Image 1 (cartoon, rainbow, N blue to C red):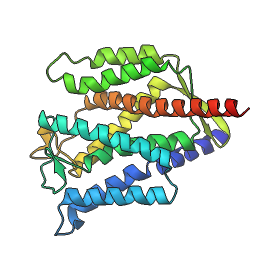
Image 2 (spheres, rainbow, N blue to C red; image 1 turned 60 degrees about the horizontal axis):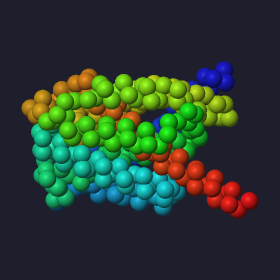
Image 3 (cartoon, rainbow, N blue to C red; image 1 turned 90 degrees about the vertical axis):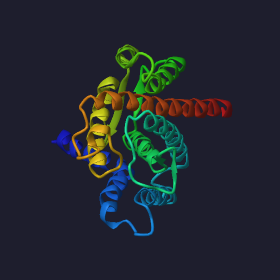
Length: 262
């Protein structure tokens, strides 16, 4: 009975952690019919995202440190979007005032929402990592994965090689999380797959509401190809490694300061 309760409570914590992504999805859905006539839809979404972030910060739903992580993801995501749109991977067909190289500025918030979820879930579930690899390994692999999103357009696509390296590097890494004082654990590679799958579902919802469009969705909406889970899996890995590395660095500094005080 305890585990059944914890399962529902786990779902509740996950839902709370997804508040910012939920705000974005609701805005995408409603803006198709409720966008002010004097403001382009993409710019309306951008304003809602900014106001939502300010609200989450002043209400202490998100901390200053979490906001810094979210800002990093916003910049990383926007850079990737500009490149991918330039290469024709997808497009943003609607007009907007705040648009750079064909990419509306709100797009960075979609990547930031992934970071928001990870930071919230990390704090609410009290995540702890066991057998986390050394920093140079995780940083190097993260750079290689992110770089492959750019280079695979004109070089060999190393995604399957990178996935094998991920399994090798994190094979022994376990994620421990706490639900109502009960500690559970999960293999880190399995958690990557699960998060990537649910982001793929979210991507289908986002494209359905016109957040962006893949080439095969230009005339009519179609389901996003199942192979995109592979891309989201790698992006999730990069996202998780950045958050984990920042958390790890913060814990090390706190430990050093505590030892110095003693």
